[in-house]
Length: 490
Image (cartoon, rainbow, N blue to C red):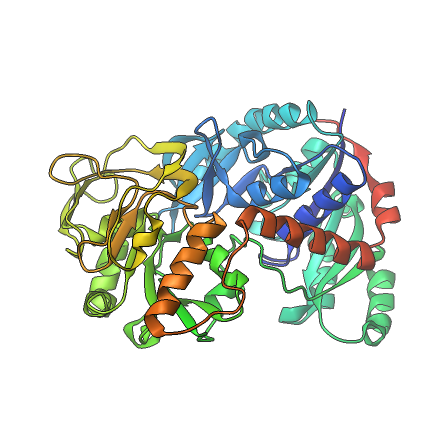
């Protein structure tokens, strides 16, 4: 039987994912077998396990921190929004179908046996399971039939740490208001409060902390400073999207409404002289050194969005002088045409950006696999990528062909320095990212300090250790270890 503890937050992006990862790292360092768990995740950033199953990337990040392989049982339910009111529902790594919000609300309790089954699978390998909640437990309109916050805490009989974000203001109201909106049994599960993303002198907070503990009846077990970490953040509120700095090498990522797997570009953030900007308009685009078109959960709609707001025209014009690189949905957009005969997205067909000589047909069966090998021969500014080892994964609903045949893992370079690939994570090998930066720097006649990337895996390992060191310094880990319960599935 595993010990269990749960991290819940006062709102989205309060820091639940990173704190879960940090606790996993600390407990791993302390000699425990530890695993993350999130019963239901809503995200457009996903990952494919070695079995070809789909799960949220937050739990992949947490599994890395715990030093174990990602397993789909760490995230049995994944919701991938397809519109403002509907999502693709993925259970145990397999697509169940698309559902509207109201239909899913009625359906989700049928998934409780799957949640319990996944949790029991984790218990076979873990001494401690660290559970992450979603959003806030005080969303009282969603409390009925909850399976991810207090509902999950009840299922596993888990003690709860409640996290508030002081950086966005009102942290005392966040924490105290959340406690006030919980039922008595729910509130009794909250064993500690955490104030996250603090900047400044903690002693200034002490009077507020004293009043918070007095009125809330729950101790504050940590005040965590604002951390500058280059770790994956799947939340739509990610601070990466607000980056406006322009570095010596300026990379622009098109941020369409249904952007997915934007973590593909995190590797480039290792260098201070490189900027990665997410842009939503032609005016924001400016004149970067490279443009990336990322994945999309609805390729046709996002291509229409680019066409309507002028980004398509701007990207096509810039492609005459700078490289453009599409991954997955972005790769599909760069071709001549996208057809949807089975109505996977909206049916019909649409002209592509006509920058690559490929055609895409969307299909209902989703391609899900890990992949590795050597990059085929390519030309143009990124010709040095030819023959390099790569690894990553594919996750797409569609088949792309060139003259009736499936192109190689990377296509481009012979058509105006425009490139495309289905492989997520293709840049994560340090030598590939380094070669791309070097090519862009050489074109501008620049020398980039520390221009050789280490392998992204090694880089993240150091980041996890830094995260754990910070949390150890500012959390009362003795109290947190004392909160651990034996999991009792109900």
